[in-house]
Length: 449
Ligand code: GUN
Ligand code: FE
Image 1 (cartoon, protein in one colour):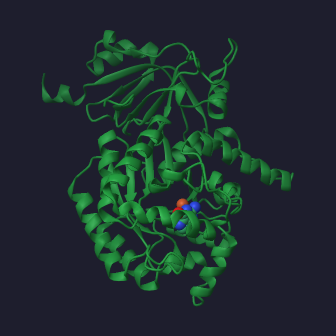
Image 2 (tube, rainbow, N blue to C red):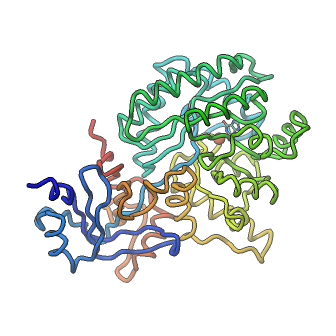
Image 3 (cartoon, rainbow, N blue to C red):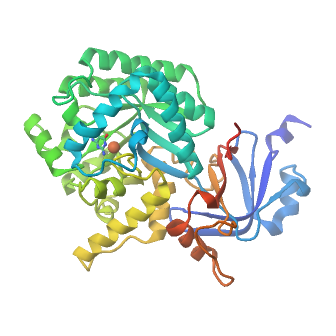
């Protein structure tokens, strides 16, 4: 085989139904389609089944090698969790009775403190990576803790199980309540740089470091400024929290009186870039959203958390009207579910609650929310060129859904269209319907080990 032929060889070919989002269509169904992957797991062609013969000649595959999806099965893009705290998985599903700042002091900091122990980190991080993968999360943007070596372990575990991940060692040099859970400014900076250099050195194909100041109330101005510089120096992704509750916004106003807003604090410290994703943003003003848009920074909408901690309700429609990039996040454990299907449902609920308060509100459709959970997430994490939908040239990050497995939590009927079945799966489905998960063309669920 000449090198030219090798270049155009499809390594794996699937035939069946593919459902995804594009910029012009929130849900697009490709029926009886044929999709080819190259050796690197990138989509090299998409065509119709009527073109199968010419495709097999052009891409050098045998028609007998084509993997045919079963009746009713479909592929959808992998779900992108744009905000999740891996250590908090330990108590997810509990501790939902306090508002944010009290919740952090009472439940979160005492748990996160313990992750200096690598045994605990390995146990919980393995469980959260496997749990999220099983539920179709092909990409996760993780907060770890302040402990560098356990944070590196989270990167190692994501790589081992094949999840695409952005991993952040948490930075916090301020903590007036749980005083044992913070770093000195110098340690935070030094350890963050060690974390970044070590993680980059390991050259994991799909796991990258992300600069992670916890949020403004736990960081000094000096720490924020130096983290902003480090993000520039290494051209890194950035994540944090913003305007989750009004009490937090008031705290920031008091601590940073010279800044015009919460957003202004991050912006002035070079922490709002097109590689930034900020969780929540429930209480941002229109002026702040304009700053987000002009910087190309994104918001992670975490509806389960916002409801569970009674933080607020993000007006997603308003964010989208400002042309700010937006993805969905579970925010485990403020959000009690590690499944992005739950994030989709809670995003619908929040939009409907806003409609109850204001009957003229333009409620988000399930199709729009499906787009936010996939393509929107890829934009929020600055990965749109790599993942988010089934476009030629992108990595094949995908979930194979079978809506009619014997123990399916819902029923499908003869006359139902692919759109109806997708809607049922998003509202009623779970990991029993998720037969396989692929990241960059590699099957990662069922687990290999
Ligand atoms: N703000 C600062 N830290 C946290 C956290 O761990 N969870 C949530 N939901 N908000 C935060
Ligand atoms: Fe969070």
